[in-house]
Length: 467
Ligand SMILES: NCCCC[C@H](NC(=O)[C@@H](N)CCCCN)C(=O)O
Image 1: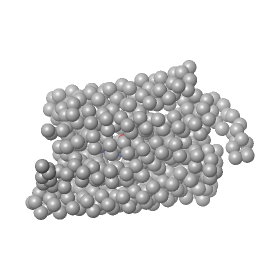
Image 2: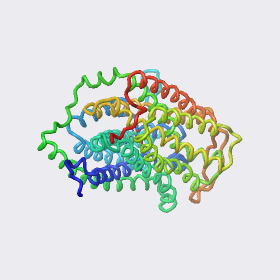
Image 3: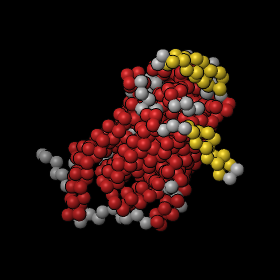
Image 4: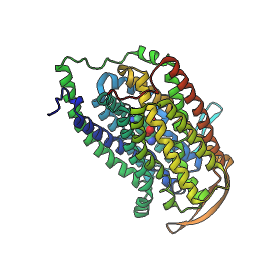
């Protein structure tokens, strides 16, 4: 007998089509943030950047998000104007940011820049190209986080009470395909074009594709709105400033957000330096080195939905976050040991990091939906992303600075495109210890979260699927 479909949301196929459309756009958007990582050395030598300049440019992702509180505005826009409008606006902002980044990296910006406030030298003789590329990345970051919040809300809207953690996991996984492509393709693209900006151009093409696909999602989502309003089902409540205060009063929310900033500070900024770390520590060629960090998003891409599915059915969300954080610490500590420099070890560690990078996100993002009501979810994700962006902004700066100040062990001369170039050699032990410290703190907050869940009964250790 045919199943009676009472609502579009009840239709499994409609839900999965929605997930595919939103996730494809997510994949397109995840390409740019990491696409410069495999070209760190080429960027540094072509544009005359130091590791600090590279760290500054990379930290750009969080500048506007953190200081202009952009995510709070994004959350407000999302709760007021909905996922459809916010998603399209976000892609527009990302396109503008990627355009500026392309302009700067393609070599159209010359000279250096110095910024002093009173007697405090904020920036000392920094290449303008790094500052402008950072500004483009900052604008891109606003759109990217705005889209991330909108996509989360859309997925939760369609999957609450169904396969929610699995859907969030799959959505995050497709993002990982974008990250993996960003690790695999830039070096071959560079070899082909001899142009460090070629991956940024590709990211613009991907964003345009993502926009087209998101417009299809809008059509389906609008039908759900109509169906719900015809059935007299109330739409989401609108954003209220008191929501921020309500969310901020929730102790579990802070534990998740702090765990989030600590955990992601040890992963995303690590990816930005990973290719160079592998070239330097494991003596691998540039082209091949980019493929090793790519194993991280690849293993995460396969495992995030698997762990999401397990936590849907079996629960244990808080325990999964503890386990993921423990693995994170082990990997970074092992990377820090100078004598562990054989190539299979690098591969093994990156794969284990991929497991950690699947465990924590697969449990963390659905956990927010368990402790915060749906009407405030956009604002809650926005607030968590805001806390997280402090890490995404400050940690690359810190690592770049530490590398230049404490980790230079010499220079080598290499012939690149027929020209002799001086390449700086770094020892990555201190940066890896810094990443490990974030992991240790993350374990602490994951335990606090588990204890709070036990006290308040949020059900983080309970399954999500209502049979
Ligand atoms: N659907 C899951 C939502 C979050 C996924 C999470 N993304 C973020 O945390 C973003 N704020 C930062 C994205 C940075 C892009 N490189 C994730 O695990 O990717």
